[in-house]
Length: 428
Image (cartoon, rainbow, N blue to C red; front, side, top):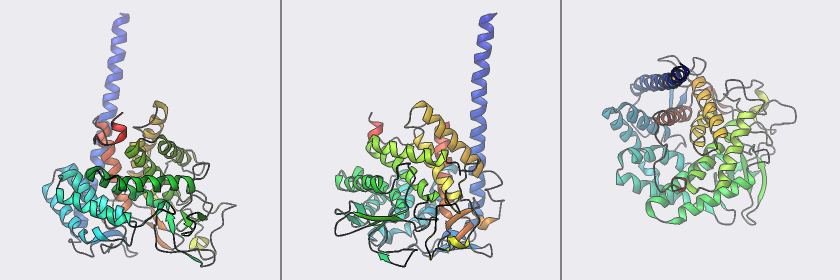
C-alpha cells in the first residue's frame, strides 16, 4: 500500500509538471499566433521599400515608418524571420528576405555604432535560418564598418559623433552609451566565421571598459560616458534618454543585462557573468519595480535627489510612464542568463522572465487585434528628455518580445538556445 501511494504521488507530480509545461506551450503558441495576425495586417499597409521600415505609431493612430538609415531599421526584418521560422510560412520568409536585402547598403556604413542593431537583427537572423553564405559575408563587412569606430586610446567604440549635454549645451565628441553593448554580437560573429581575432578583441575591450566605467558599485548604470580622446580617460557620466545623470534609465539597464549576458556566452569570462547577474538583480530587486515587473521608464524618475538637466523635457513629465521595451529586452536576456547560473539564480531569472512575458501578453500591454497600428505591445517609452515616442508602441519592443517567446519555446522543448560549438561556454 505504501509503495502504491508513493508511485501515485510520483505519477501525480509528473503529470502536474507535464500539464504545466503543456499550458505554457499553449501560451507561447497563442502569443506567436497573435503576433502573426498583427503582422499580417501590418503587411497590408506597407510594401518593402527604402522608406518602409516600421518604427512606431503616429498621434493619429497610423503606422510610422523610417528609411533604412534609422537605427531601428533592422528590427522589422528580424521580426519577420522569427515569425517565418515559427510558422514555416515560405511567403513570410520571402517577405523577410525582401525587407532584409533593402539594408545591404548599410554594410559599409561607418557613421553609426548601431550597425549591429541594423544588420545583425536582420541579416544575422537571415544567416542563422538559411545559412546563405552571402549573408555571412555581408555581416563580416558590417563588422569591418563597426570596427572603424573603435579607439584604442579609449578602449571603446564611439557611439555618437557628438553629444550635447542637457545641462549647458556643451558638446562632447566621444560619447559612449550603454546601448552599444548590443552591437558587440556582430563583432563576435565576425571573429567566429573568419577566424580573425581582431573583431573579438575589440568587443572584449569595449565590454571591459564599459564594465569599468558605466556600471556603478550597486550594478545600476550610467547611460552615457564621455571620453577624452587625448588622454583616453572618461570625463564624466551623463544621461541622454534617462531622467538624470545619477539615475538609472530602465532600458539602459536592460541593454546592459542583455549585452553582458551575450559577452559571457561568447567569452566564458566569469567577470561578465557576474556583471550580468548584478545588473539583473538590480533590476529585479529594485523597490521601484512594479509588481508586474514592467519597469517605469527610469527607476529614479521624479524622485528626490535626482535632477534632470536644464534643457531636458523630463522636467515637464510628472507621469511615471512604463517602458514595455525595457521589459521585453530584459525577459529575453533573462531566459538566456538563466541557463548560465547556479540552481537558485537560474530559477529566479527564469521565473522572472516568464512573469514579464505573461505580463506583456496580458490585455494591459498587448494590443487588441487590429489596433495599435498593428504593433503587438503598447506602452513603450522612447525618450522623454527629447519629448519623443512617449507611451507608444515601438518596433524593438515587439522584436525582443518575439525573441523572448522564441527562446522560451526552445527551453520548453528542451533545446539549447545556442548550439554553436564555437561558443566558449559550450566547450566546457
